[in-house]
Image (cartoon, rainbow, N blue to C red; front, top):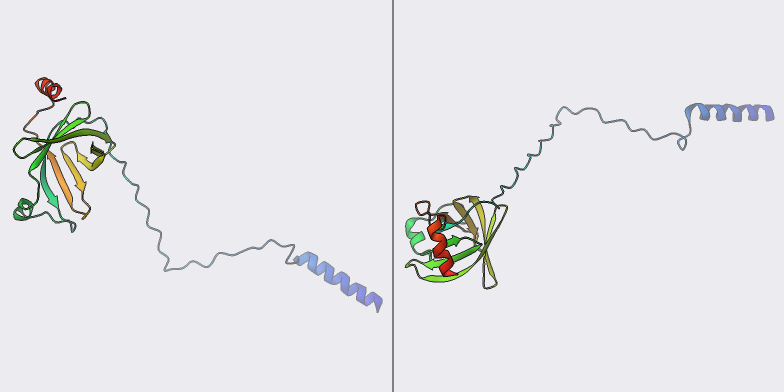
Length: 172
């Protein structure tokens, strides 16, 4: 009987060694069968690089050209006329700008700076941030999510030629 028991133990040990015990065997997972309803993942679009306007020349006269409502529509002429948009900004050399009312009276002045596609006007501890769309168009988003569109007066090269540099120096 002892021999039979010993033979059974040896047989069990050999069987376990041949098959491997769960603790000795690495867990192998088999991938699930392919699904015929699986859709390939949509590739993530590569973001386009932020344009760099840091070296652009923004000198000139900038007017309010329009306002885009929060829903993306442009204001009508009558809606636009009711807004306080009768002012313009003159950007001159050395990071200086002036704000004028519609009659040409100076309302104030400050400093401006450009970083990538952001133009920031600073005066009296306040800042106004514009997104540079191109070298002649700026967008400023208001607290109500409307967007003020400023455009450079391309007919007026004031601030870009040599004679205006003398005028700029007189103001400073």
